[in-house]
Length: 254
Ligand code: 6PG
Image (cartoon, rainbow, N blue to C red; front, side, top):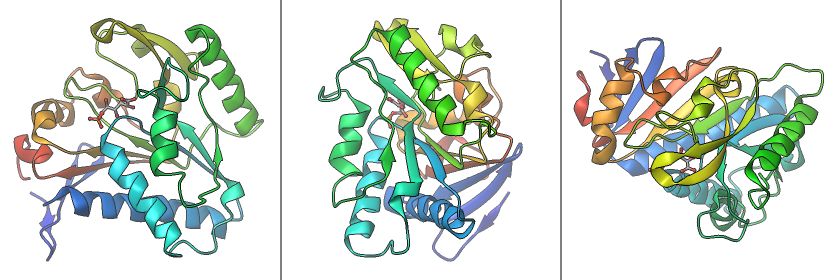
């Protein structure tokens, strides 16, 4: 049934994943920020480039703002940001200044206060297939002859169990050759650009951030291994779920 720490944080092991339930969203984002900086600092100690893919949507905004604040307050010394390469788990097919753009959201949250990581933007303004092909090229250049292995991929999950822009019933769920796919999302009547499972499942660590009661039902299904996109994320490395109590209200032992 897991362990409970003094500050009410519960840790559960579920089907190869570490599930951590925080009483409140603020604690979830503090822990996620710690994981973000731990990953970077580990790479700095290994004198290697740190490659991360980060989530879009609204949940991670609080995380990105918290990270930027810590940098602003000088709590992230010793990081050579030029060796931190940030990619996107997915992007909407819109220009970078569009209200729906994940890049725009990152610029307004994570990239304030002079955080000068190398940001690899998806060119959402291009035709979808071209945007996906160019992003895949950029990824292949990034990993060169090395192994495709992000140090950390931060993911969200929708109330329908989607993650990145891998939505239920969409074609990209079955794309096992490309690293980046242009994916038409019927429910949204729009195109998205998304990393595919090949990339998500080759990471050293996938970290899901899920907050809010509206996700409780889908989350309970996903953690039981239901046939939902987020349930198919099974990285070669670590799989971490950071939940708040509201999102975890549907799982046993929470
Ligand atoms: C996006 C995301 C997407 C997101 C989920 C959850 O571009 O929207 O990458 O996968 O993580 O939809 O979104 P919220 O955090 O807004 O609930």
